Image (cartoon, rainbow, N blue to C red):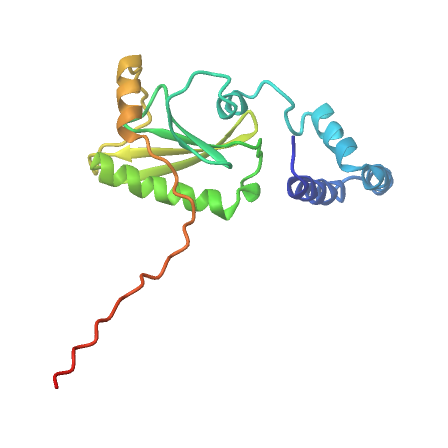
Length: 196
């Protein structure tokens, strides 16, 4: 479930927290964690509810186990419409890996969030896009919320009809472009004819 990088980062965080325990307890815990392989460490995290094994609604959305209105996805994230939006075009950017800490978010995910924000602002003619990063069920989720009137922003949510969600998801849907190698155009030059 967790990648090597995530496990290493979680080990560091736990080791740092262990330092705050009484000396004997800290030494005992440090020794136990140091001898665990990655699989054992992940089981330890799940058992102690430091990460979730199952039941995370966002993991279920990312795996397409729950019905959602997908705008786009790539290997790292899925972007869906919020079912009870704050405003029209409110989307959730959900990492496909169960990431519980903002420090685990890769630069590529942040870059996608910036691009999606600009896309929504342009496509929906919003004044701005407000970002809120939350951790629900210990899964980091980006909320991108279009704001249409400069002074009118609150967190009241509205129920939106399924037909409107379907229509809006089709309107906003896009695909990520893969990195393309730029090809140099071959230019043909024609030499002027020489006159005798």
